[in-house]
Image 1 (cartoon, rainbow, N blue to C red):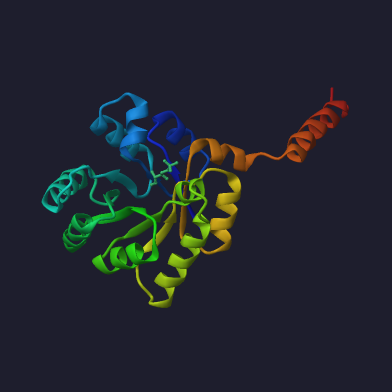
Image 2 (cartoon, rainbow, N blue to C red; image 1 turned 90 degrees about the vertical axis):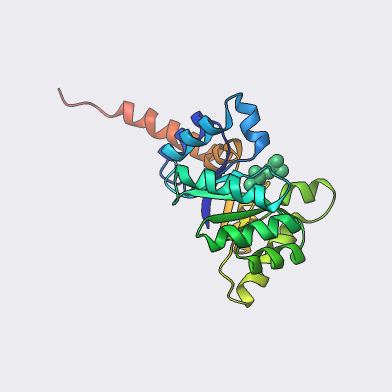
Length: 217
Ligand code: E4P
């Protein structure tokens, strides 16, 4: 399973890119707004750091507007820019048009298998079911990801499924177990994934024992 960071914070993205495990990045207007920076500056910086697809959300409400935004973003970096398009009828039209122009798309805010099927048929590069937001309303978010992965794979469709709205490390483990192609993970959860108390104790003990070894004069 590939690992994307779900963030627009340059410090977080730069740090995780330095770990050598980063395959891409997803952003959304809420994440960009938290940075307090202009949208374009933020995305340009992310494109300079991440070696992989970077999702940038289109905010128009009609297909021509989404396509225009997508084309503008794609000019920044045609290989990396992935236009994030919300799941709706106008979004489907935009995905079809952008994919016809060779521009990558990520169909976002997916909450059902029917939505995923339509997004895949429209030519979405990525499909993002939101796990945490379903869990929040007492639905099993991960069951949806699993069903969508099965659907995509049984028909050999090309879209990759991104487990999105990840809230904790177990969401990541479960995403990998059910065969999600990608998980997009917030910085805090990525850090949690590195930690284990026995690792900390082990490092401390090895350091202490190393210091007891007589050093050559
Ligand atoms: C994914 O692309 C979205 O940006 C993100 O995962 C949404 O997560 P949230 O539900 O925690 O806002």
